[in-house]
Image (cartoon, rainbow, N blue to C red; front, top):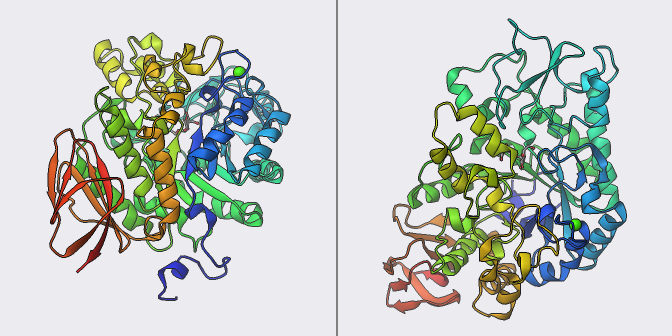
Length: 561
Ligand code: TEU
Ligand code: CA
């Protein structure tokens, strides 16, 4: 192995050079909520095509598109009925091709969502599978006889109730980790794996550059499907993600499909601890390239309950993830997506007086970490959580499903407080393009209401203002592109215990300072550090002391004495 850290990341036998996805900034689009062009209240693919210049100006390199496939939408497209068809509400295959061509013309790559732990129960495979015990598709899914007049084991579904549903016709139960309309595929069956490889090739041959893989650690089931212990039932994902065949399936996928194209793959690491996730992305093992870790976004989550978090804990997680990735892994940096609350509301301060400064600071954190940053639509504007009033205001099946599970022992008020803080619909309200009706998202009735703060927080207004969150985010993406220290440099937290300032070195030349609170902080740097001046942003510097106003951030050029 060479001593040069850059070449140490290239395993023997792999193409030399740094993979493009390490230097990319990724932007996630939730198509249902991006832009509606035909007034039916649902975002669509032509809406994405219409905004490609906006994405180009923002400076992102890759779009991750949440599922755009034919689906009955029990879980907004994460229940796929036909993997080769575009969801009619979103448009046609011609619309998809036009969108992809528009991206390619602008130098933007597209990765799509691969949701193959489960399909929809309306998928032709499942329609066949449930017909009878001897149907040729029976073994595409996981069917078992019941036990003692109930389900085969005590697995619980993430969206409420048991993870087994009885099919009256054939008298057996099928397994579904999520909703009953999302039956789990049987990866033990080589035909299932071939079908998945085929559909991957279908989209790769169209020109997509890779996949974000939904709950990919769950594809290998526990042998014999034993009952969970009481302890395991509190967080079953750690059992579901620990199936023995996961790595075999991923290596096979790389060999059969991915290795033959120039791709980027990012696995959703739900249920994996950092050291287990590292195994999926160790470049020597030839499985996936990147993972979406849950450690940070779910650090203050206990089931449906939100607990609290503190800055030193957040810092410790960043250091842990960085160390876990090691020389053969590469991290992602993100603070929200379509399953989590808005980052400025969760990690920042969404009070109208602070939201703008705070969103800039949160976005600075995302864009200055070591790893590939993922921004979620609206994050570049500092979009906030939605003021939900009642449980009926939520569209997401997770809110209702979990409520059914706990309503006999939890007050509605307590449940609502938690759903307001953590509910997935916070991130799913439509993009706020203008201060006009429905934030410019639709001329019709939006499928989920637009946040009333669209009058104050919207792209049109921010595009005109040089000190907006949008302008800051755009400038920072450009700065990152030009900075070897940010893209490649190592990561060192210089003050892990400070409870308001996050201070870290990137490479030899940069120090990032983030003030995670409203109080102004006079922050003293060690004498061993020479401050050459701000590299991005401004700050009042007096000798070794940097004054950081509430919720502000700065990147300093520094060197060691
Ligand atoms: O999510 C994985 C997942 O299980 C959690 O993130 C989910 O939001 C919930 O909290 C589980 O308790 C992926 C998708 O991102 C999500 O949108 C889908 O609903 C889910 O898988 C099923 O496909
Ligand atoms: Ca539409």
